[in-house]
Length: 197
Image (cartoon, rainbow, N blue to C red; front, side):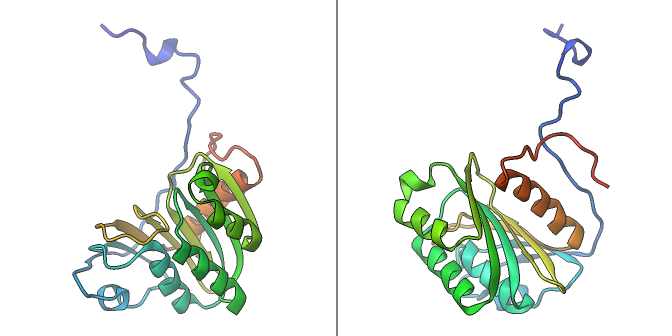
């Protein structure tokens, strides 16, 4: 016998999250020692989904700039729990060279405590930055030709751990992620239930 049923709950209609479903061509790649991102993944395709495991040979910021090298100048939305100095410097350089047009960042609210200098740099260079309870590691890179979402396990730090993730080239998926990030950046509630077409 259960303590309660869903019918007895006052909150049974409230959903704390959202999702989008899609169908597309998929691939899986496994990065081995001493293999560069290009050697393992090759080139992006505009409508594809690629699962990768890095073997600890590259970091999230390396992957982000590998994608930007293929897309050309783009706006970037990103979320992460932690950020290292190399990632922050790469973002600064990307903005200075014009490879990153605008940069929107969601960071875990403890980042200023853990990495005060990095937080100061981010506040200086980002188009908009917000501190939230965040463990998501998602990057969206979008311009007129490309819409790429990277969703992975790696923080924006240098690490030698095995990390995995998905690169999805899809306008619908990019817009889905931009939508919730923009709401969070603007102090909205991105997790208010809604049907996504």
